[in-house]
Each structure stands twice: as structure tokens, then as C-alpha cells.
Image (cartoon, rainbow, N blue to C red):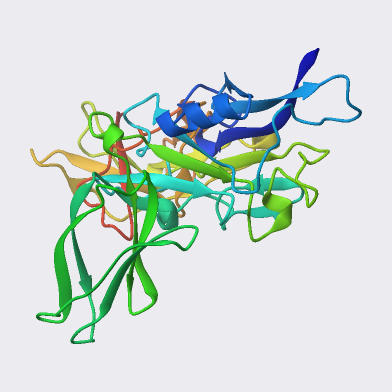
Length: 362
């Protein structure tokens, strides 16, 4: 009997931060339970840059790509992703939330121009950030009901825990133990309405992953499955994508004089000329009269009029320009101002307006 390997599906991660400079920012591996499932169904796992490929074995004596072991609609595979850099969230457009992992699934994905995303929006967002928990964990949910029905449901809709709770001060709380439940994502439900999603897997206790991806054969949208209606792998193996947007902040350049403290804000400017033909991609405006630093040194502050996305390849052509007189033309003093570092926020930042700051001398 001769076998060959055929692609079942591919899992890949994209990140706008690495546009033009692809890097290894996340590694994927099958969970412990999925390793056993792969072996049972004669599936092969192959890691690739920021993703993985899953193959199935085909009997070459049969016509077409018939798996050696039949694949069932209940087949579900879980993969865990660990960030290669501890600053992963700093250069991703995601709110910093401790104790969370990103949860992706083709059950909640969407297809756009032939690409199958494992999230409903163009990029991963707060909706994919779920609380990571061990077998025993605490919960607290607000509710107007005096005695709501509390349930814990798996994504397939199976209820693994159900009880009636008594509310106190407009909320129910307690400690939940899912000792006999298999690892996976669960919804905490009050009176039939999902209120919070958690991901439970005690094996992650020592090293919680940055992301978890679940790929199921049975989905609500048939185009998101890797199996067709006949139960065989689809002719065009799907590529499942997790896309991350790059973090963006207002960029602030604080221009500090080296010697001349009479620096005139009307005779300096920050100008972007790094676009095609020297055009401006970003615009900067002086924030007002000179502002003294903590030691009393006057400084001129420029801010971008819009938030700027960070890139692994820094933007070139953001220039500091000066002129001798107010009516004289500007000339370049510094051709490439440094880009601020992702995560290096100014003390003036607010959640609604993050600001990254760079000091430069003139």
C-alpha cells in the first residue's frame, strides 16, 4: 500500500507591524489532546513561519484524495501559539489585558476575497481576548435578576455546569471547578445569555500562550470548513488566517535646544517627506508656545495630527527642518528623525489618546 501526503488546511498569522519585513513573531504547536487526534486520523503537523500546515495521508491506489482514515464532521483540532517577543502586545493594536489569551475559531470566522479569517472582523480585537483560567477559577457577573440560572457551555453548545445562583448587590459570583471538563473555550451564561468567554487548560499554567486557534470540521458557514458535504477534504485546501493590526499612537517630537534657549517655534518644523516623490504620509503640528521641561529648559513640541502605525521597518523621511528667518525657506537639519519605540508611551497618554514621545536635540 502506497501513501502520499495531501494538504488538509494551513494556519497562518499576519501582522501589519511586519509589513515589508516578515519576521518570526509567533510559533504554533498542537495541544496535547490534538497530538493524539492527529495520530489517530493519520494527520501530519508541519510548522511553518508564523503558522502550520496540516496534511492527511492518501491511499494512492484510490482515485482522488481519499484519506487513509476517514475524517468525521466532529473532528476538531486545537493549536497554541506562543509569542516570540514579550513585547507582542506593545506592537499590536490590542488593549493590554493581563491574564488573557487570544482565542480564534473558524466557527466565528469570515471569508473575504477568498481568504478565511478566524475572527469576524478584519483584524483580531478585544472580542478575541478571553480570560485564561485553570480548572478552578473565580467569576463575577453583573445581573438584575435576583436568582439567575448560571450555565457553563462549550462552543458546541454542550452544558457542562448548571445551577441557580442568588444575586447580591446586583451581581453573582463564586468559584467554579471544571475538573472533569476537557480543555477548551467555555461561555459563562446567565439566563440563556452568554456573558463571558474563558479558555480553560491546566497544562498552560506554567506558560500561558499568546493565542489559541481551534479549527473544526463542522461549522455554521460551510465555506469555513476543511471538509465538504461529502465528508471528504475540500478540493482547494483552506488557508486560515489570523490578522493583527499594528499598534498606532500619536507621535510627539520634543525638540530641545543644545545651547540656544531662545529657540523660536516659528523657525522650526517637523515635516514628513518620505512618501512617493517626497510626499507627506503624516502631518505634524506644533502644539503651542515653548513648554519648559522639568529642569526649566524650553522645548518645542510637535505632534502628529493622526495616530501613526508602528512598523518593524522604521519610517524614513520624517525630517526636522529649520530656517534662519521667519520668511526664509526651511532647510533640513535632521533628515531622519527616530521613530518612537512601540509601548514607550508618554506620561500624557490617556486610554483614548495614546501618545509616544521622542526627544531630539537641535
